[in-house]
Image (cartoon, rainbow over all chains, first blue to last red; front, side, top):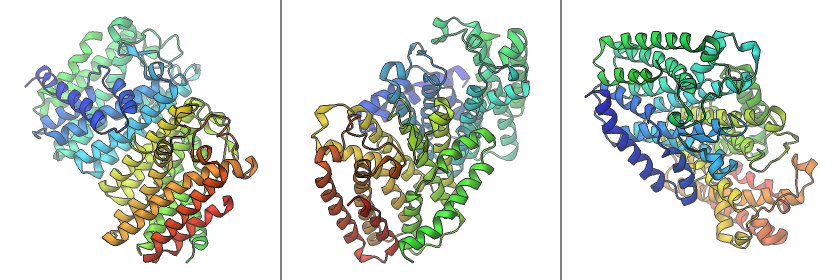
Length: 288
Length: 288
């Protein structure tokens, strides 16, 4: 099975699971509706698919437990988007072509929708895996030494010229903000699928390259795509004073950096039969 | 050991654990400082002590693992206070006699401090217990069917006269907002301490009475104490259009309700040797 077939098989299954369980497992209809609005807003399900594709590379059969873990990851990712879009943070009105949660439902409602999605996501991961090791991986990846730490550095450094040329700082911030959760998707699958030490090394290296490159890709989308294509406001990083790899290196050197990381990620997968995982890198073609 | 001795023994141990580990386990000094500011703002450590006192009733020896779980609960409680105080929520400037997180550090910083404390709290509970059952209890207690659900009903019903006389709605909202997490402290100890079915029944009943009564107590503090005594703005529930047991029943009937629940909670503990737990109810004397 190639990436496209894998994606076409599992995306609707994850979508159905999310939709069904956000209805059946949240007792208040209105909160359920607010949570579902953002979760079902047409995301690519990249992180759940990455978890499932890593299991596939490890020959683990995917059943409902594995789909529950994958869907839990998406709940957590969605929480992070809702909070990132808040007026006090990036203040975005549109996401995936729809009004952001706070524009649609109100600011308190958006904060609470995020606050509800995070523990529920961890619950699903814990339930599906029955493993405190997976709980450790996910809580660390999204905590102060992971995603939230990166978001803090982003907020703290916006409009701060002193870090504009500090590539170590920018690398660290982007890694924490985006890379940590992506790596965790693979790391959870590696743990869950009982990978041997060689598989583990290979897959984690792939995840680190993919996680690092994904933020550069996302920054490039901001300048290469129109708002209609991206489903959110684009060309805004520079005007809002954001410091990132793109503002540091410019478009052509960012593309070069992305290409290099992509090749490194491809090389990681040479020793393992992982056609589906390799297909994730094709995503980058649209900005190269 | 009585409640006062127990409290005096364990409060500084929990305080030291929180202070030390928020420094050693959060790599970015500034985020660590923002998180610590609210966690170390002088809370009573009621929920950690309740967890530890329940273990004590079950004759479980308290070591570092148990203190890690107890401290994890306090991280989660602190996250909920930081988010509740936000301008979009209750918009409070003071908490425990100090500026609230968003007044001190900024709104984005306060949102992120909460977002960092929640997963770290779950991580500590998971680490200390090595039990997915405890992860299940805590994530459910603070998710959309627990604390966040209650907070949503609170926000949604503020200045909504149609629920002002709806005691079922108010009971439900207050239970979710406050009772669920309090019950979870006892439920986690019951699970962790391998309580037998009779101990479990007794302790959970106590927790339900205590959890329900605690919100009534907290509402009474709002009218009975001055701002200086409470360390936060008081007399504000009525003026801000909040609906709660107090606005429903008035002061004297709320006191009667609190007394009844207190007696029920005392009765629950008759069959078990739980001097320390019984001492939690003395807290209410200052509003009765």
